[in-house]
Length: 236
Ligand code: XBP
Image (cartoon, rainbow, N blue to C red; front, side, top):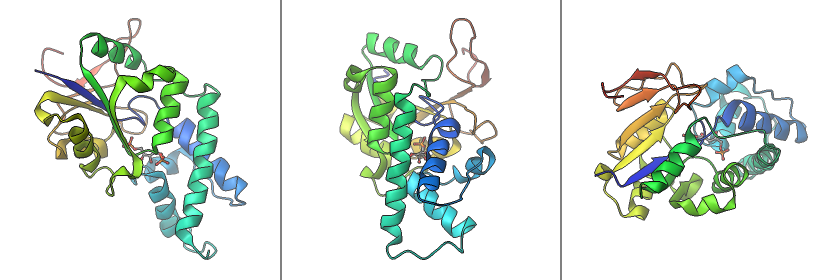
């Protein structure tokens, strides 16, 4: 029987990317005196690289090969990334980013049903905690038996490592868990850890290939606006 639900964060719990991380990256670049502008469209491309530090590095290599040499590129990227996260936290505290419809209901119903909850994400741990604090309140952090995030594993999604790490922390087999994801990279990561995966596609993942998911929905929906099933078993 089902024992645990494991959630991705960015795009799944909340639409954090276009109007959250992207804006914060641009603010951090401007503060550092860089004229880089990550438009919504370009950001869709850059999202193929998971992890904010990895994304900046990729952008430098691919889009700014002429960028000034810095003595310690790794440290420079880390400082840009830290500035981005500070800006991102401001957006969260300002109430600019809410949970996707139906997410809070699902979490509450799952708790009521005695299911274990967990998180498996590529983003920085503090970003997960701040999102939970600013949307569901401080106590919601304790709802999750495991929060696997960011650099705790060396290989980020689409590698399965973060899901494997969380399963290990939960001491559960994948057969009794269900993963919730919004992207093809997330699906690949969860599937690679042998997890059945439920997709709620989002702003940046509408045209992703979700072959292998147990169901693809446009969201979790709410009473006034039920979700649409894009593909899945007949009982949905
Ligand atoms: C999310 C990411 C992250 C966020 C930014 O992927 O790729 O990099 O865009 O967060 P997923 P950080 O939803 O698959 O976990 O800057 O903290 O990495």
